Length: 159
Length: 446
Image (tube, rainbow over the protein chains, first blue to last red):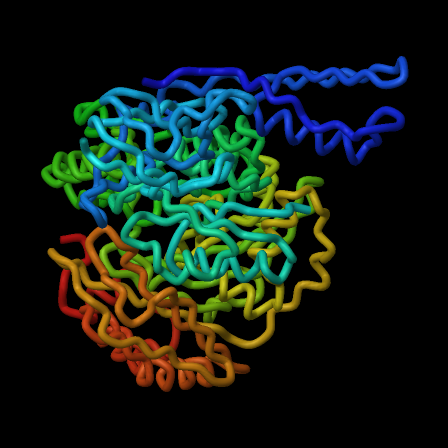
């Protein structure tokens, strides 16, 4: 089921020196927008800079991303494994947060309804659930990559 | 200027937009349905995102998927092309709320000009003639009858949110009004999601002429000449040519002024065109404004040398127009054919495609041999534009180009285009919007 989360990303900050220059601020602002981060504060050598992003109103019902009920099971791939494809366009996240452990690893047995990954679409995190019990034999997409509709994400072998 | 643009369209216009972006040094992201992953626009763009299954409402009209594609690929603008979501104010607003610039006019221009009776009222207040009609949408057939009796027949019943020749019904007498009312209302509901209709006097014999406009965000506004789009089949434009023949310098100037006034009346920005009907006495009437790059934009581009797609992108980025009206010079003559797939029940595979070329020929098409043309694909297969120093030279080049064009395996209206390009009556001069139907022995409004 769909859930909304606020990213707790810690943006990379330059290792040393003074406060961010304009170019760096721009990059940080882009990073905040992209990660859904609303506020960011950096303190260095007693000086502090705080960035607050104006949050746009949540999408109306008509524009809300398609609600994801689990995943799709496509044609049988080699060795009896099924290809799990993305039901939506967005960004692929293997874990609920950058430092958190991944939802699944190769070799894991997943239960029906278990979350496999998140697809971020229009700043909303959509949980992609397993539709059947099976063993994950391959993870086909790198964490953080932009994915398209129908893109192959996992190979899962029914057990 | 933008760094990266999402091309929210397909077919020949998607290619046109991608090419313009490439010249401007802007990266492009194409969107496609599952059926068009290997389509030319998907392959030509720097990146491609499949946004959904084949039905357009699940892919090319799927607003959340399009926005997600743009955001995940970090574009800074969205170009809607023409058709699909190009004149949809809600889409433009959703883009802007997502932090993506919409390449087109402001949301308010889309909303205003998309409401045809309202656009008529505003333009009329600016002193531009409009056809007698109902100033507001009509509540029901009874109200339509009252207005119809005041205005007189024949009448055109039009969907208030319509455009592009869709959502129209002609009523020649009170008996025909109910049928026309029903047609306009149901097509409006089905195609534009709005069942409001209004009526306007119908001109039996008129020329359809439109004036190209381009405006920047600082209200600098230019007109780039007119084109005649009178050759229509079921209210769909088949052939456009510019300049319009036999117009006379004075009428041409008045039309251009009226188009500029109409655009100024709403503070228009970006590219657009203002459509007029001209009756046999030379009186002209505003009918509507298209708030997007038009299918026929190649004609003003060829005649003036101004790249309208690039100008539209620059205007949306807030770059001022570099040209002045004095620098806009219309030279020569251009004629363009829209080659369309004939309505078909099933899908057909394109066995072969050959585009003509040579001096003065411009072909815009996204066809490739092996493509499958289905009822869900864009019926516009190719545009063939011919340019010449004179009208005769343009038509001569057009005939040679159409003779050479091959679209094998898909039924198209190319045979009709070949006949028209060689028609002696058309070669003699201007014709009216009824001419083709009469020439073909059919009835334009069945």
